[in-house]
Structure formats: structure tokens, C-alpha cells
Amino acid sequence: MSASTARPAAIDLVCAFAVTRTPPDPAGLAASSGHEEGGPLRVLRVGGLCLVVQDVPAALFDESALAERLNRPADLERCARAHHRGVEAAAGRGPVVPLPMATLYRGDLTAARAVTARQPVLDTLLDRLRDRTEWAVKVHAAEAAPEATGDRGTGAATGSGSGSGGRAYLSRVSARRREQRGAHGKALAEAEAVDAALRRHAVAATRHRPQSERLTGRRAPQLLNVAYLVADARRAEFTAALARFTAGGACPAVRVDASGPWIPYSFARWDEDPRADPDQEVPS
Image 1 (spheres, one colour):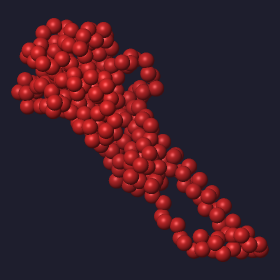
Image 2 (image 1 turned 120 degrees about the horizontal axis):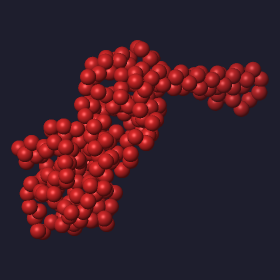
Image 3 (image 1 turned 180 degrees about the horizontal axis):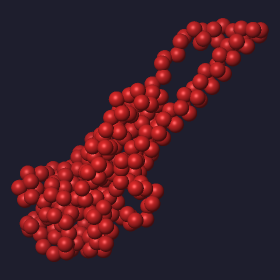
């Protein structure tokens, strides 16, 4: 085990970003930054693996201080961006396994032991992620047209009365509810069709929990939030299939948004055996 630079004596925690087999370009690493409060990014070699780390002050990164900071949205965003910069720096020359945000150790030796303990899983992940990237796809129900106000006005006048007016209003309300259920069912079916079509061009896929309307900023519900692991050799096939849906028209009951290619965070859980989740794998 060796480090590319010596650790400053006044800084006593090591923040780890990612594991790779290929040492990052020194110039690229020097030009990158992790957490603004820490030292330069450096490489800690552990056997045949390289762990990209940064020395950070315990006063700001110990358990209690970090928990307090991560409860503040602005600090949480800054930490997430800093973590991503560190992962990107590690990914310059080959596949990487990103570590969870704020992975901290009491020194190089403790960090090296953690990598050594997980080396079989890390080797499997690095083999699996070579020449592959992640694409994020979110499927929402199409925005419904605003309701006409005429029926609501009729309901106010006749809904509590008797006779044909009240019955007609209740009938319209019932019909609208049936239409809404039907539209939702159609949107769900189209969302599943989008997923099935994209999986045919992916190595693996995993579903994340749909985001709330508060996070998406849309009135229409998010139906699917899926990450796809795509081989570089099949990227053109995948993006061509994706374009059919993001352009609209192919599935009119939904709206499809996509982004990528990304470092495959969703498929690089080093605390789980990548062979133990068959639900992620897409049959070839």
C-alpha cells in the first residue's frame, strides 16, 4: 500500500470517492477538486486497485458535524457535487466503482482494509462496468387538459337538489372518474411498454422509487424512474429506441425524459454482491 502524496498532519479523516484499476491521470487529478474544505485528491493503492481519496478535517466531517451539515439542503447539494467531482476524477481512464457519498475512514490503513475486505466484489463490479454507462429515464403521465368549469358550476346549483339535474351531475362526475381511471391505466401500460422496449438494448436495468410531484415540479404523476446499464457497443441502438419515445407520439399517454450517459452509480453498489440481484439483469 502506498499513497501518491503524504497526508497533512493537521487533517485526520480520509474521504473516499471511488475505486478503479487504472490510476487516474495525475494532471487531471490535480485539476479536480473534491470537498472545498479538504486537501488535494490523491490515489491510495491497495493491491491491484486504486482508491481516490481526499484528506478532510474531522471538525467538519466527523459523524455529528456531517449529520448536521447534510440536514441543510444547500450543504447537502455541495457535498453531493463534491463527491461527484471526485468520482469523475477517478473515472478518467477506465471503469470505476463510486462509493457512497461521505465514505470516511480514520486514516489510510483503515481505508485500505475496507477495500481489501471487499476486493472480490469490487473486481466483479469493475469487470461488469467496463465499457458501459448509465442512462436515466423518467416516465410521467401526460398532463391532463384543464377541466371545464361548466360542470362544477352546475354541480353547485343542482348537486344538493333532487330531480334530473342532480342525477345528471352525478352521472357526469362518475363518467369523469371512469375516464381518469382509464387514462391512468393506459399511461401505466404505455410506461411499461417504454421500459420493455429499452430493456431490449440494455445490459441491465433497475427501477428507483418514482419521485413526488414536489420534486418533479409536475402535476402529472411520475410512473417510472428507471436506470439502464448500456454497453458502449449498443449505445446507438439504445439511443435510437429512446428517441422514439422522448420525441413524443409513439406513446401519447406518457411523457418520457432521459439523460446520459452517466457513470453507472445505480449498478455499482460495493456493499452488495452484484451477482445476487437477478432482477436487475436483462436477459440477452
